Length: 306
Length: 306
Image 1 (cartoon, helix red, strand yellow):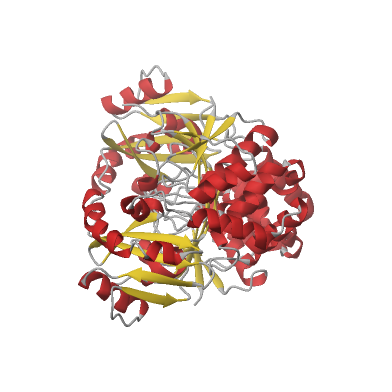
Image 2: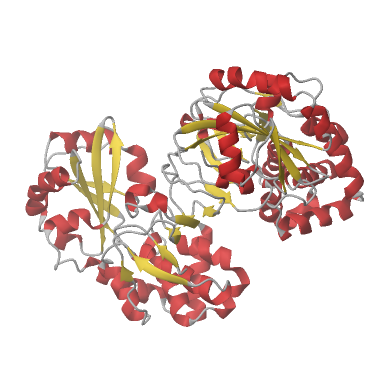
């Protein structure tokens, strides 16, 4: 049986690239028949990665069959995985997020979770000396994943290991990292083709805080103005998205990668209260700038209060 | 804050030794203040390990405080952990069991689960070249854990890695493995001091199969006769233990380490049906011998049918 390797339902660069990296490793080094797949349309930065390194776009699947061999990467949260995930045969999990609970397996398996910025960094460590056999396009995917998840080392999630491995890959590939990261971030920032509802769901995770269900959405961009120009339409789309997705409120953070700050949209009293209590912010209008805030995982979620 | 390192509630050798090994590593190599603790009385083989290698018996704790830093080893199942485990700060999990689901963390952490026979084997791999700094008594605990969980390589859970690491430790320590394993198994087999109810709970895990809740108990011994002599009293104690623990039925497997077979007790129609459907056995009396069956994880649980 072919082992399917996939990340989460809103494929960003790491969730698109890491399945490709791991399926290469399983096929070429471990002799396991494996295939990368996606659980949704990749974002514009992930598409840039595929085009730049001439990688095939993986097939998108809606669910998995019972008993299907799967390896899960870049998440361990059943809410971000196919509906039938707990009837599949999960043979491995490689991730860098908190333990969500809810995944169960019938047999012992291989799990590797580390508090690093990027799944691809953990894979680099697991692959070890077999990296020598990795072709250019897979190394390229790995570098792109690390630069994406660390926001070119600006994110506070960045560790020395993420940095050292990215530098080593860039040198190996002869890539000018600053120039390449600019191209990546420009691709990620080109969101003109997306509707407001699509933007609110593009990079979004649900969390419960104080009895309220929040859809916490982040848009990382080098062009915050192009998104904030649409703030009225974005705020108008929030109640509909929240209702459809069973949430009480959408929180949108527009992360300015270059200036290392986030702008949070404040459509109502609830979001104002969240901004003031969570980030010690003084809110006067319908947006508030949060200096230094770049990471949902490290700075937004752990501080969220109602 | 001191990090507490512990295994599961019914401490066998691996769940007693692995916390000691990992606390040594955290203290001496990683510079993290750590302390091994137990969640219950260690079994007779684990006590033999402590005495033989002159290790202090860890303190037994009943629960953990909210926010307490903890590392969990040899389990990932909340049912086998302190009641307040999900309010503790879990900084690491090292295990070799199936994913039980139910554990949650607030932040990313380090998790390493591998389908090897023994937690100590995984720790050996994680510690790497720092093994050179490990004192004799910690290496001794590691060897004891591996010999215990593999039943001196007889268990089908045994992997080449478990074997190779045990051989390397035994050579390093100048230990005659066969002789040492005999002493361990003799210690484990000396259960004369325990009541029938204690024996039924000594190495026991709960599983639901076909809507029935089973307490699946295993007694590994080189002296099966000394346990089977007590079979009438053991069967008489089963209904009381099941009722107290909220289970429908206790299943007891007496594993004969040297003859590599298990004897299952058959007190009633339900257990007879389980034996026949799960192990293709023909039951005529109140016990049935299951040739080759040694591992709950690999041979009993995956086959259990009602």
